[in-house]
Image 1 (cartoon, rainbow over the protein chains, first blue to last red):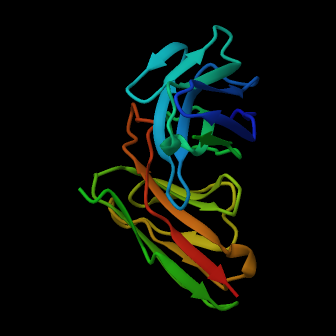
Image 2 (cartoon, rainbow over the protein chains, first blue to last red):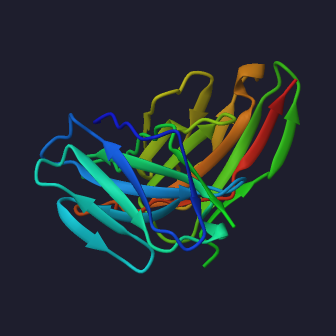
Length: 111
Length: 115
């Protein structure tokens, strides 16, 4: 499974757009990119997943360049409740669904 | 649907004791997983199962055992508990299959302390 690198922490203010970038230089052809969110004392929650270009849902957008060696999770107009740890995961889930979590990015949203 | 449920929520064990962490899901998911999360760290995969009767090791299986006799249940057994097993344990499930969703549904976790 491809290794990912993302910033340890980020700060933002309410109402701002937040972009968290993840590097995955060794991504394989069959790999998908998935992002999870985790609040303190809770299990992670799926946010978004993509393979290439751009994916958008009601919560976030995911931008993936053509070479797929990185991806950017975009959270529009964050609020205090978006303070959480965000994990970027890369892997071929077709057989086992295995996910390998890194350390994640701790996002702190300030008023 | 209750989703993924875990029991107990909290447990304190003495060194050398054994226990079973229970996990159940009511979504008819084929795939189930056990993770541990140490303070300030990401989740580590302990064991996983792609269906009843099938289990396999993850990243950190030593000191643990699992079984999967039904689709719904995936208990995690700790034998001879050690302080290094102090952690929060999360169970998760996903639909799997020929074209599996990559969305895993997580339980609320079990906070285990070994002293």
